[in-house]
Image (tube, rainbow, N blue to C red; front, top):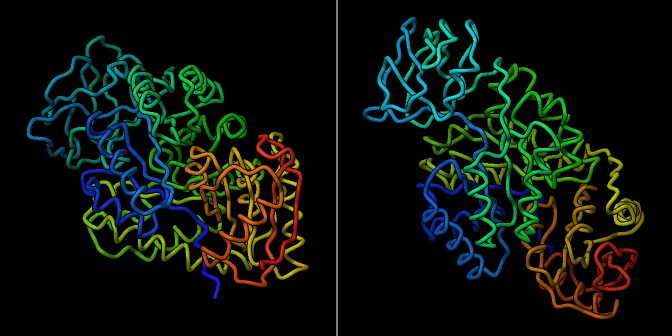
Length: 476
């Protein structure tokens, strides 16, 4: 009996709750495909240990795992607080000063001193994803601004600070980001670099120049978390390799009811553009402290699959939560349960991707072939992984075996919907590709002897972008 492949991919964040090699292995076995390393927290030594442990687990399991570096960007955070946190009461006054200090209940500093210059009287300041709300009562001075606490709560060091109505001209690449990119490229172990607070295509292009200068082949994931990014989303999709709908800051920066519509629209645009889309933030948030999610969270994950997300992401749930492995298992169960209904209602979307038009056309043709023939699987021989991505964007209800001799492409394909990446030897003839496809289809139990599979490759073999051959092959 051919096995069922889980098509929606899972991204899990490594942190204190999941940093051990044993837990990383359990997360991978539970269904994690991509491990996210958040550069907003931890030290360089800790991050290096995270990556090394993922690679050790990858070797032990004999299955590829991708690693994503998530840059901080110009994220404003609360500075150090005496004792770690303080309680703010409704109606009290709180000063935010330029010079770094150890904060108290009456006075704090933040990681971006320039907000003292940009903030205006009457504008809101939101902390900890909007759980604490301030309103600027006095501004214009050189050293500090005064705020009134509109909605109080526990103010902890390191919590995010948003100024949704304050326009600040800030680069998406901070000096810290540039140093982190240098560190990332020196290691050569990262498959994706996620860029925070992207506003325009020029932000992505600036990061790409840094990576290219260091001969780094990591793909760029542009995080959509500002209203300006939503306004320029098509140009950002065109410039990036993948998109993340980062609903945490997006839900603070724009009206909350607008976020689900933005999520659906962006996912659909990524589908048409042939780019991966990740839905992130608070997907199973209650599992940070509870072994069970809420019913609404389960529906949220399922709807992300129905919105054509290629991957869904866990943040605090696996980084600092009490039940990291259980959260991955739960997410895996939800996306598995949603697959059959997704296939029932899915309407094919025309994929227009200039860099791989022939591959996109062949992928669309396979959908018609599968409707006419009893096809068990698709096998793609690819050098860059781009052909596999075109098939992934067709969202076929068939497993896609992606055979590649390139390890960098192998790992990147861990993010692609419905794709099982397999490291294969380099070949010289199409008949060798047919033999490899047959072997792996049978070995992985995705098909059985006598089944038909579609095999896609290119001529000349080994040349990127040369995909032009399709064979309907019967397994011996």
